[in-house]
Each structure stands twice: as structure tokens, then as C-alpha cells.
Image (cartoon, rainbow, N blue to C red; front, top):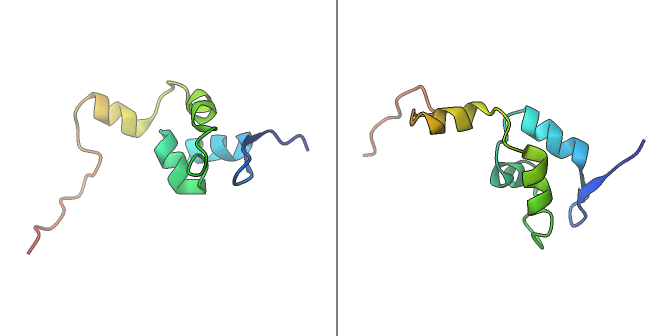
Length: 78
């Protein structure tokens, strides 16, 4: 198996980043939330951005149209 590491700080591979992206992570910050990549030295953030590209992302599409990403109404704060 050929592993290409994107984040050497946390041992995150290119395949893992792609997997998280397919699961809905659209930004480096969302990738970081999923697997910590990019949260230590930050040297991999540009590589993560390059892997994410500017492809279709449901959340990004909603943001571009200025539509809320949550469909359920949240309860009012007390």
C-alpha cells in the first residue's frame, strides 16, 4: 500500500483527507475537526486545500446561495 502523508504531525494520509471530504468536510477547518490534520504546525493546510479543490460541496453550494445549512429550526435560547 502506497501511503502519501499529508500531515506528518498526526499521520494523516491523502486517502484519509479524501475520505473525510467525501463524507462532507469542505474546508481545511472541517478536515481538522475530523482528523486533527493542520492543527499542529500548519504546514499541511495548503496541501489539504489543494486536495479539497474547488469541487462541488453541498455546504459550500448552500453558502454561495446564502441559504441556511440547517433545515430544522433551533429552539430559542432561554
